[in-house]
Every structure is written in structure tokens, then in C-alpha cells.
Length: 357
Image: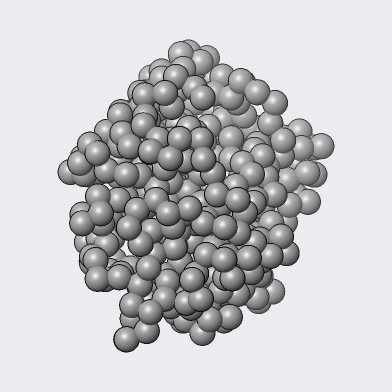
């Protein structure tokens, strides 16, 4: 446990749910933990006891990636965690594969609707496997489009480019389909679940329109990836929106959580449920302030985003992590560039470099 984690309180201690089984974390709220095929090897999902149109059952929040081992964990959950009751709807916090990957399967299996924000639903539909066969993949996530995007920011190593190019179809392989219909979740709306109101809180920067859910009656926040207890949330610039400034959006979204109480129980997508939201938000502001200061110091001489990787990341990165790291490096450069603290040049080699003004 790092020093920041030690400043948070974990009501369930070191206890983790066994794959496919659930732990109760609040009245009518259960915690599932599913495997991921990455260095970040798990995602948390949530079961909320519900009643819709006279039927008793469960609302599922987030789904996991579409892999046989995750489907197997869900099959275990259906028999051991649902008390013999059906799934009544599926809520997805955002469009990343570990959250939306199995939405199509869960919705089809239980004949229930999907609930998401509009922006994230549309992007998931664009990039999912069934749509990918009909739609050119030019979103800068993987393949040739990602190679071009990262090359503009200094990643020109042919061997690494080959590895990134080989990841074409990464999203579609983890998210093979998306339901053709959905219910839209909108900032400030109340979603009635099990006789309690969960308020929709939309955050930006990590995903275009990330949904968190706040229940005042339970004092529980399902934070998704917007607030995590141990790692910092990935905030990246992709080739889909190459002039984006997502770090500003992310920090602004964190400020909008100031109205939540200090004793709120936070249910994150990775790590353990914790209490100490204001502390964790303050840690995130401090973290990014430190990273921005490091970028400013490095940019006393012209730097590309690729040049900054050893400044921002002090560990060996595999190709999966490298893609996120490049996006984060660009995001920090853009935050300073759009504030006027850095100037940008497109040099003769076709690479953007940034330097202090």
C-alpha cells in the first residue's frame, strides 16, 4: 500500500470477492470482481437490488471484457450472487472495454435494456466488433491511425510502431458488439433503483461522458474510473480528437465532486471500496500539479511527448501501457500549451515539440 492509500479508510479491509462471487458493501449493493487480460488485472462491477415494473431483480453496473473466463465468472454469479432473481437492466459507466465489453451478452441473455450516456454509447457502437466491419477504424486508438498519431508526437521507432500496428482491432476484439438500442443517462437525472434515487454525475477527461452514480440515502458513490484509490485515472489525447485538452476537463470534473460528504463510501472500478473522497481528490490535484511541473522543467528545451515518457513514467512499459502513456504525455503537454505556458512547433521531421514560452 502506498502512502496515499494509507490516508484512506477501507471498510472491508483486505477482503476481496472471489471471481464470480459477491460481497455486500451496502444495503442492496454487492461487489463483483472480474479478471482482465492486462497488467491491471481486475475490474470491479456492482449489483444493485432493484424492482422494475413489479419484477424483483438486479441492476448490473458495468460488465467486464468479452472473454470466456469473464463469461464463466458471470455464470457463477448468476447462480451464487443473484438469490435466484434475474438481471433487470445493465448500466455502463463509460465506453472502455472493461466496462462495456459484455453489455451485449448480458442484455441479450436477460432480455434487458442498456443504460449509458449518449456520447459513450455512440463511440462504443462505432468501435465495437460488429460495427468495425462496416466502419473505417480511424479513431487513433490502435493500428495505423494510432501509429500516425503517436508519430506526430515523436514515437517513430519502427519496432514499436509495428507492435502498435499489430493491436489493430484491440477494441473490437474485447467489445464484439453493442446493443442496438439504449436508454440515455443525463447529468443530474435521478435513476430509481430499488426504491432509492441514484443521481447521475457526468465526468469528463477519462472518457467523453463518464457516468458516476451517487445515492444520498446510502451515502454511496459508484465512481467508475473517475476516482480510484491507488492509481491515477488515465487521461489521454487520442487521434480521434488530436487537439483535445482532457486534463482540464478531468480536473474540472473532480471539482464538481466537492458537494459530496467526507464519509461517502466510494465504489471504484479498480482497487477496494474506500472512504475519504476529498482526500483522494486532493491527492489527484497534487499528482497532476507535480507532473505538470516536471513537464515544464523538461521543456526548457524542445520536447516531444515521446521524449517525456521517462520523465513521467519511471518503469518499463509494455506496448499496451505505452499507448496509454503516450496519450497521458500529450494530455499534460496540451494542458500547458492551451494555458499559454508552452509553445508548440511542427518541426521539419513532422514531430510536434513543445518548449517553455
